[in-house]
Structure formats: structure tokens, C-alpha cells
Length: 284
Image (tube, rainbow, N blue to C red; front, side, top):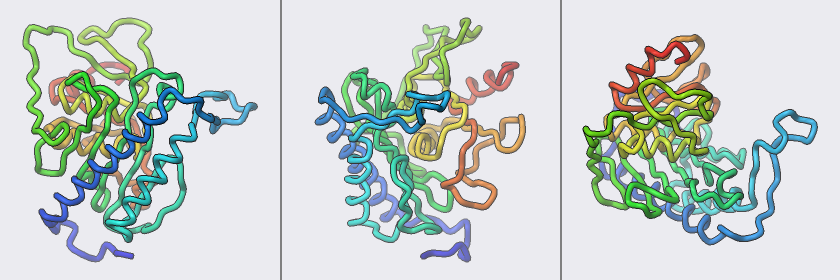
């Protein structure tokens, strides 16, 4: 197990980073392949909440969720057996405390998936000492109107299926789109709001310029780890709330005891101008 007694500012090896991004893409695509193969079948579904819980039937898990995470974990172990991994469906942490942590959401948007609503993702993010360095999000749809993987590594460009993505914003569009945690009761003054049911997709769409920004009430690390890497590559601004009412610049997935797996906080991601407007909102 690796310790943190080395220089925190030590640069990452470029060749290793390239390998990590390539594997993240492979794993996200693998998740997408498994999801597509299962779509439309009669799935076994359970709910994380008990019937006595007021949130009954709000946290579904399909048999595919666990299967996809198992497949991803097995593939990762072949390449980086000592790296840590945290996933939504399994508690096993093979390399707890390692400098490299893979955060996996096998199906983000499970409610959409089990209902056959075609908006879901398979997300693989990689952290180095708590900071996002690479991410890959397989999305069931995209700016190209086809399924594919948005991916990036630190200091590299945002890509879609291997090709560099240079998003262009149409200046004629005066009201852009914003992803929100819940459907608004009244229209926002400066933009139209959308609720997709997938934080990973919303982060990818912000990075790609399809959404001007998005914010999340309290995502887990596997919901946004890959999307944070995409946002960094695309030059987006990211904020979080930790221990107070004020939004602060996001500086990595660090909880009070330096355990990234325990991170959970409100987060916002978007263009600098959109995030600035968001901060001026009374409810922000």
C-alpha cells in the first residue's frame, strides 16, 4: 500500500497517464456494451430503501448494475491490481490508501435504464491523491446523436470516441440550458432548466457545451469523479460546499480525514460566466 510521504506536487508520468486514460475509456465502453446488451430484457430489480422507508422505491438497483461493476473491477485488476477502486454497488476496496483511486458508477441513471428511458451512462473516474486526473463517461446519447465515450486526462483535450471535441456555442441562442437536481416550479430568469436523472451525463454535457452548467445537491464521488475530469479538461469552473453555506472552488475529493471515498458535497460545474450567475441567485 502506498503512503503519502512523497512530494504532493510530484508530476504524473505522461506515459502512465496515457495508459490510465486509455483504460478508463475501455472500461466505460465495456460498461456501455453490457448495458446495451441488457436493455429491453426483463431485469431483476431491487430497491436500496426498505418498504418502511419514506424513500421507498426511490433507489433502484438492477442486476446489470452489479454485473457491470464486477466486469469493470475484474478488468482493472488485470492492469492495476494494486490501485484502489470505489464503486456504487460494492464495498470492496482492494487498495485503500493508494495514491490512485478509480471511482466507478456502473450505471448512472438506473431509474431511466430500468424504465427503458434512453438516458443513462457508465462512468469511470481516476483520482491521484484525491484530485481528478482522468475520466471517461459512456453516454447512451451525445452531441453526435449516438452512444459514445466522452473522455479526457489532466492537461489534455476533451475527446469523444478518441477525436478531440471543440464545442462551439451558438451566439444566437440567448437562453442556454442548465442541469438541476429537481424540476423547477417556475422558469429561471436567465436559462432553461433540465433534469436528466444522471449526474455523469450532465457533467459530460457541460464539458461538451450542451449544457451551460449543472449543479447537484449532494452527489457521491462515483457520480461526478469522471465528470470532474472532463470539466477540468474543458476549462470549466467547479465549486463545492463543504461545511458551510458558501460555495468554494473545488480542489479535489477530500473529506475531513483525507478519505476520498467519504466525500459527498453539493457541486456546481459550468462555464465561468454561468457559475458566476449561479452564485448570484438567492437559492444558490
